[in-house]
Length: 350
Ligand SMILES: Nc1ncnc2c1ncn2[C@@H]1O[C@H](COP(=O)(O)OP(=O)(O)OP(=O)(O)O)[C@@H](O)[C@H]1O
Image (tube, rainbow, N blue to C red; front, side, top):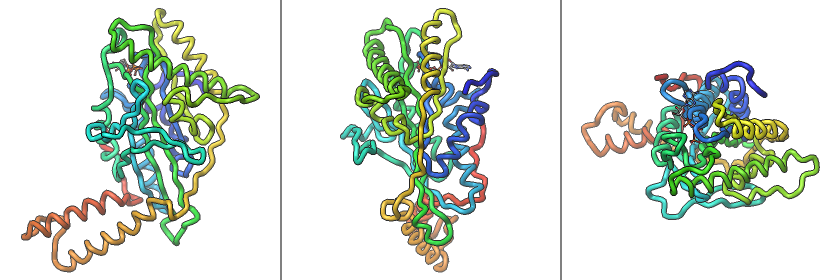
């Protein structure tokens, strides 16, 4: 759908992305990506700017707002952040320690990345800290068009698991992925040699994405070349129909960019023809991390209650530094694993 009025990112979020976040909260995979030529505002739109909140922070608020009002379900959230740079995957939450580079695997048609850090989060602040941490490791560089051009594709994912609060509810454990993607921008040859090498990989992977989208719009679908790039391989399940998708296309209005703008608009037109059939994802209790964490939470709760009945004050330093450290660690772990419903946990706005 095309927005007819110039709009700010939070308006774009409310009209186009919020419905996908709502679906993600109910077990449907959702994917949002920004596509457009270099310097046209993809990172501005996805990550945001001091002047304007981006799609990712809006979505994070959307997720926690939904948890706040949902009194019937308990949630467990995890976050991962992957970068594809020069056709190599990097874990942006673990890039320093990373000895084994993450790789794409497929099992029974499901694409996943391993090894990959998935951090458990319980507040919007936790999520935003991880986003900033990942962004520090992201490859950016100055090009002829953008001083801080993203030289990589970045996939920020919130994994949402939930179960009914009452009863055992094992037949209604839901798992979904909310993928928020900032693609690198298509570009003409740039003057800097290193940038030119990166640009070649960027353009090839975007070409692969356009080819996949073209194939997906064909009435009689032939082989779809997902494996032609890491980007399309990683997005195979999402593009292939298991996810609700929102594609945000950004353009530069200057005349010198007219041909790229036309290409982007054509891409937007083709994306709007792709049909997806996302299904609700249910998880067996044995595979549900939320079930394993339930046991851990109960155990921590018991141990904390014992400490309190022994007279240890959890919110104040104890006379014994060992008891204090143990209780603080337990309390921290307990808080990390529990997201109470019915409490406003909105991230303070700048
Ligand atoms: N709507 C906007 N209003 C004000 N400034 C903007 C807007 N969109 C983009 N900018 C500014 O334009 C510059 C380029 O934007 P941005 O980095 O988001 O582009 P990009 O499409 O992500 O580029 P690349 O593909 O090279 O990474 C930045 O300085 C950004 O702050």
